[in-house]
Length: 292
Image 1 (tube, one colour):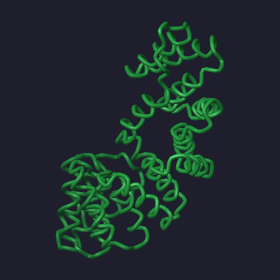
Image 2: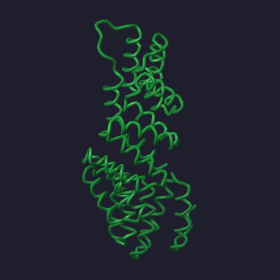
Image 3: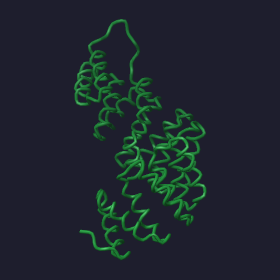
Image 4: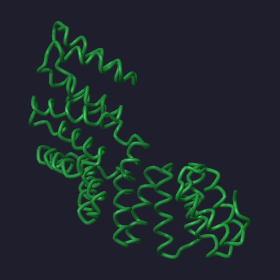
């Protein structure tokens, strides 16, 4: 799904993961390190170094020594999440919750993994719990907004993104995702406003320009569509969807050859078979020679 892909590609939660890790999963400093803590600390070091298999091995040993080591389950859940071992991550976060049932962060993390694995109803339930425990948990509102978007519950997603932005007015991703919700509700002027805010905060986000180009297209502001597609492509030269929208828009401005060239770029990139097929048919429709 678009939302999961976006989050994965931009590593949107990297800072959040580290914050929750520091607050939730690092045990209190003791005067003497126990064997279980030693393995936990080794697992933590490996996690930070992105040596995930070694991290799991160390955390397995920590848990074998102390089966009630809730923080070790939590950290191992993070490692499994990074490896996209979603079932194992859910199991570990569930154990961590058993040992700390009032931890908003742990419910958030499990809810997020439910979202990654397309288990949307359990994701909503966990994110609801996280927000109940911590009503100022901006990232939980944001993630729940993504789930509502996947469920096409756009009005509810707007409420969640509103709350996320109340807590953190500089959260570019919330403006972007709220803009997409507005677009899906055909409220394109409001979508454009949010995309502008997202771009102001993060001017190197190619998707924000691409999404704004879609809103401009519905508003029939075709020169702005081309400008935003060009900006998205300048940031990401292999952004096939931006080339496709550009190719579909240029004929409306009487720029047929440029449209053919844009569609040829879709074919060259070739990362989306549906777009490649559309591009080939569009080139023929525009009078260009068939692309092999």
